Length: 515
Image (cartoon, rainbow, N blue to C red):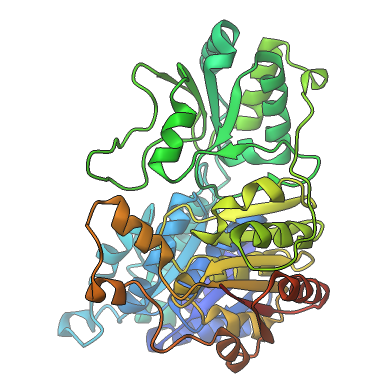
């Protein structure tokens, strides 16, 4: 058994049985091992950003890490943007990155690079195997890191000779460390704050606090104390739809966020960060909480937020009977022109039971939350790191993790072009993904940011760097070229029909919403 085979067998034995791949020469022994060893599903991506984003989406839905296979430093570099997003989302991933043979590195061949240096900013754990005998133990350590609390991105660098030389036995993955529980003192402090001023307290929630169970406990606490429960602007995963506690998010736009937060005297954090602006703007604050507002942390990432919220509910005497009825927006089938409001209604009505919605709709989707609160129960995934080209790969990985669930990917036309190759993987694997591209022919988010930073009135050259025209991108043709049936719509009536057909049919579909 060579080093590559010992690693594949260690991965499978350690519960890592999916590998999103884009290999090269240095990884061919690992590819051969994937061929020989049963139990590993291999999913090819045509760009490394698809590979790393798919691993992120897989973890968010499965809760266990997948592996990736990347080619040397440049291959890893191509995947770093979506590793950045995955790291911000606290997703567990095991990256296997090839490297030149140990004796070849010193010759400075064209693909020689500092792979560890490239990996460290987007990884929590980095190691280069020194020899074939070490590979399986290093792989087991990488799995343990990816499965830790909070989960980590682990990058194992595999020199070619450590893959082809003779290795020892497969390694056993160390026993998972017990998940940190929560601080009773933090629960007592949060209970004190909520008892003394619930109406002036914001409970800011993310992570496990956004599961159906976590939201139900937060709803009881809000009903008992009168506090406001909100989410950060972006989340790794949120349970939404009918029968679930619908909460607002802190708006992205500073001018919208400040009035919402101005009257809170206390903020209780459930895995969340303090509210801050996404970017710095001239003469605008970076910190969005009002002056004098005190922050109290109930749980951090990796702690048991469900248990903490349960203990807090008990301390407050909050019960299911304290829950107040929710006022949800009425869903009415829209007709006529395509507008953000009509698009939101159409999507809310089309979301099927138990769907997974991957949201990178940027400006078009800022108003999607109110109507989708009344949609069928679903999970909502968002971009935690802000690097665009997130949603098509994440939707791909989510569909691999949950083949029995429909995935709806909402993406702007500019973002879609970063990782459009994900459609090919969806077609090859026959994944149940409906990709909705909002084609407004401009980086609309950047047009707004141009005004937001006070850069003045954009001239022709500036606008040319923001517009997506000359030529206009034909997403239906791109999808067809990668094996995905697609259609374009110009009215909301056409959109309703296209959504109904795409949701009903198995396999991937694309809808281009021409706005």
